[in-house]
Length: 426
Ligand code: LLP
Image 1: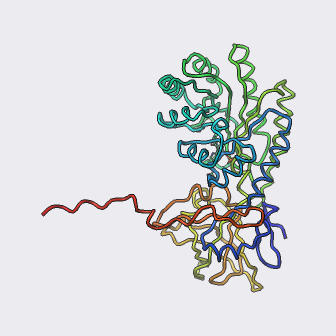
Image 2 (image 1 turned 45 degrees about the vertical axis):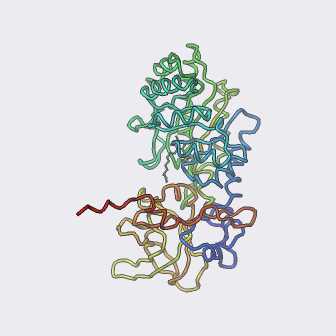
């Protein structure tokens, strides 16, 4: 049986397997909560982009905020990817994983001076700039460093990506990007500043997008601008259409990456921009369905209004349900023959909002293991230490072998940098 989302996840003889590896065995070997990723599933998702882009000038910049484990970054770097980063910390990770700085685009509305300098020193490919103040600051920092910063302006195309308000970013009321109607003026400023060189244009309209139409609308707006700017003598070498392509959680049917890319390229061709380099910043669609979060059932607590299944993973491990009311599939690692009951699957954290799934029909016993599916994106990267809970371990399945790619966080690391107050002198 194949499960929603990933052809790499299957049930055989009642046991859930990721890329042919028995997940219950991993839960027992490495303990829970445990994130498990399939390298093959990640590479398969990337290949869908790459096949459609073959023969075209392009760079896939993996939006590493989705999953920034070094082994994941290494996997994508070796497959030729660049990276979309949003902090100096992410830049350090890319370099530690063996990624190339000249394939990094630096996004984000609030880059600090120190982060700009760090990125200039290692030679990132491009800064995706989001405001005039940022342009001026970047120019000044580049001048002081004796460097020239390559810039693209993130244009807010004001298109509705039709997604959750917290992850919709391309609307006028969002904090992101430079308003479409002001973009030309801001490009003129960029072209005039001494520490900058204009190289591109970008947008990112939101996340978990399940249609191609908003991308094509945004692309049209970018191409209108490119034509107007080039008519003024401001050359735009690349177009970056951001990330945001959705995945299947319960039943969404987003286009495959290859379909989206084919439509984007066709629109570029139709408008005479076939030679222009295309950048993309996919995050979730590369890793989301390549990962699961494994957890053990600690207690079953049937009640008058609700039945609670208390597991050892919590909102600190996976915050998407609590934060966005995201629905993520939950599957037992071993199927039971007993009748299913309806459960709210909740964690040990002291908040009513600490749930992973509500009203799920599951046949369960204490000590069973469960998997939260589609947890490869925005799972571990959004984990916290709330309730002084160490963050989960991470395992990657590589060619049939389970490799520990992050140890469970030792407790001492949780408060090892804290200091007790000095004892008052008598
Ligand atoms: N590029 C930029 C500039 C972004 O802000 C993002 C995501 C991406 C690319 C990648 O988008 P993706 O392909 O992953 O949709 N924590 C939320 C998602 C937040 C996305 C933020 N920006 C979630 O768990 O649904």
